[in-house]
Image (cartoon, rainbow, N blue to C red; front, side, top):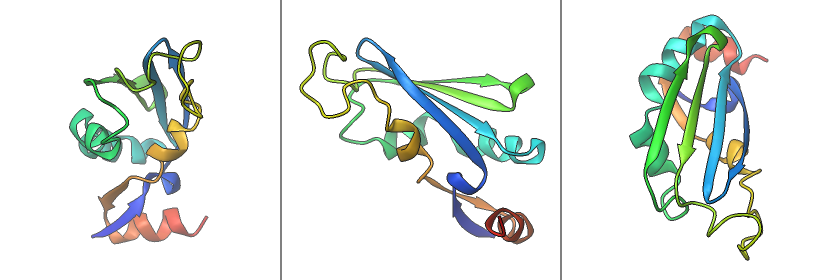
Length: 115
């Protein structure tokens, strides 16, 4: 088993709805999606965004798109119109999530890292 960052397995997009950041994580290949479902849990995302996400994290599975969608509540200091945060709309949260590491089989790691 090897640990690799999500950036080698998926791409992501993020934005905001008020004080909630919305992060979508989309597998590059269908065979990567079950790894995301298994390991990128709401609890792990909450831990990954410790100190940033002060509320609950909700996860939604979107299997027809081989994607996960996360809502990070209370993570934008009130939202884009009132926050003094540099990223009050959560646009960089997708890049931050892609830095999370998960464990994969050595063969998958070798394939994913070769790109």
